[in-house]
Image (cartoon, rainbow, N blue to C red; front, side):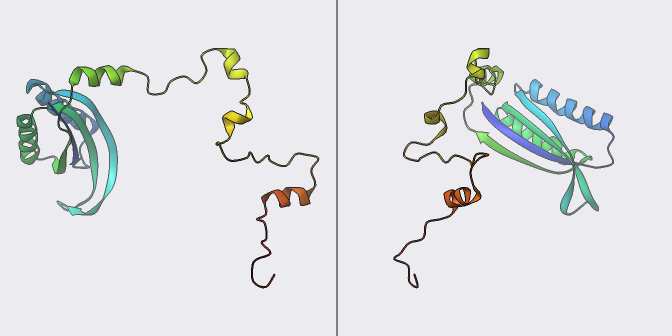
Amino acid sequence: MRRYESVVILDPDMTDDDIRGFTEKFSGLIKTKGGEIIKIEDWGFKRLAYSVKRRDRGRYILFDFVGLPSLMGEMERQFKISDEVMKFLSVKVEDEVDLEAFTAASKKPAVEPLATTPTEAAEPATESETTVPGEEAVQPPQEGDSVEMAEAATAPEKSSDAPGA
């Protein structure tokens, strides 16, 4: 199976119920043709770069799904004959998708927790953890430091080899 994304620009005069019916119609088409929906996103109203069917705005909907090439052909055919579709663009994202592995990976949390216990979260990071190897750590000026010291720490060094020095 292949992974596809289709962005559809709909008539801006459609109601939310009409848009919900439109997305349900095409999600049903995907499922009846043996595909699987990854996500459907409503991007809202956007200004168009040029007028399409005498409209300067459109409602953008993204369909992200997995299916066979025959499903993509049927989706595009339905987009062409649908009155509410002003424009659409479909792209193939991946050639071969293992649907089981893909759904298992999408169910995992996207971000691993940083600290597993409360004591790990309370520990301050050491200097070796906060600096890049080979670079020395630059400390911000402390409350008791003079202004000249702070400026000297951040000012570039002057070279005696420069002309006019």
